[in-house]
Amino acid sequence: MKQTQKTLIALLAATVATAGLGLYAYFGVKQPEEAQAARKEQSEKLFAPSAPGEKPDEGGTPAPVFTQLTVKAQGVTATLEQQGDTWRLTAPVLAKADKWAVEGILSQLQSGKFKATVEEAPTDADLEKYGLKPPVFSVTAKAYVPEASGGGKEDPARQRTVTLHGGIENPFDGSVYVRRDEDPRVYSADGSVRYALEKDLYALRDKEILALDEASLKALEVVAKANSYSLERDSDQSWRLTKPAAVRADGDRLKQALKSLKEQRALSFPTDSAQERTRLGLDKPVLDAHFTLDKGEPVRLRLSQVKEGAGSKVYALLEQGSEVTLAEVPEGTLAVLELGLADLRTKMVLSFKREDVKRLVFHPGDGGTPIVLANAKPDSNSLDGWQVEAPKAGKAQGFRVASLLSHLHTLKASTFGEANPRKWDKYGITDASRGASLQDADGKELARLWIGSAVPGKEGFVYIRGSNAEVAEVELARLADLPARPEDILEASPTAATDGGATMAQP
Image (cartoon, rainbow, N blue to C red; front, side):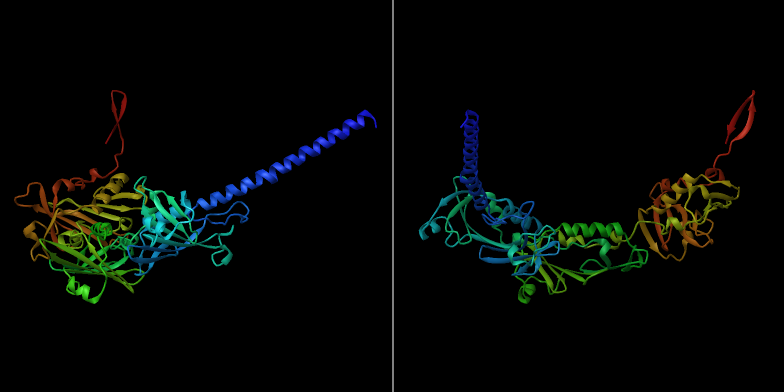
């Protein structure tokens, strides 16, 4: 054999040996290490979506989707289920779940890990020492590992369940002792795990008393000791009082009341029963409200006030269909819907839709000639279409017309007085009074404003009459922009004037 051949054979043998060592390093050392690391990572998780050694889906194992939680704490077992986009309690009561409490539980289940193994094979005495026989709290979570398309909820192979038992707190570092499923070992976990999972029934329940949006309402009726009233939504979606007076209502004030009601939080949830309702005075409530919704079953809210010692407590009973909530609420809840006529009626003087106004007639008063404006483009809301028709013709200041319409649409009275007076002239209000008439394209009057005499004893205020047949008061300064002569609304037209050879534009 030649020397060259010997060298090649030696190189080949060395290559094979090196490859063998590499394969041994991977299959004999590296691969077991990786498997051990995967098992360790899985065993450290509170809720592992896949078991050690289980082959993950392409792209990795997706996060589990939780569908049910069973929480045992302070002698009560509560079941929560995901229904659509929300979580609800299904036992021992039917109620909406507290969003933040559920999110805290799910967050720990998804990312929480054990810190260390405390006992490999604890005795019953050890379990009692750690507060795990019986456990202080337990959480059973059901979930499924979704497919790439998001499905798999009904696939048994993709369903996962874990039960975590929590013990007492380690006073040394604030950690908590935990066991998982049938694993005999005792672990320690961060105190945040106990804070998130150990939830009693009150913590798991949504604390909102009534979360209604004004837009969802069709009608509201409130019977209270001091004030009773009824509100109905008109065809234009505005609100009208039907009791104690038939006047337009302040929709913004209603929104404010509902917002305030939504901000009230339950202080406790007494066990509901007929006897408990009677004891708490809810069979004879101090306030009884009925909400008619655009969609869904109507809602009834009753409030009672019970003296306890030197103070008192307020209780609420909320009913909608089969769902009932009995709760202690802050005392301030009583005042939220306790509204009088002055609170509920709109302060707006005129009621009209700005887009419907195609003609304007301003009455200067004192026998002055009315100023008449019309939109030459009745099918358009263009500001360029406004023209002065009388007593002098010409193009109107479009921006001024828009400003006047906006001002009249938002004009508010400071107070209201006599309704349907027999003699308006005692307030200085007659057909010849200064004011404004807003009309549609056919000349039909949409709204009318009359300005009367000064209010005695209130400097700077005058009487007015608007869309409702009642006397109102408003600051005279708020009416100063109403035109009194055509020049106040006509667009200035330049006139040529020669002055020393120079041409000047004069209004």
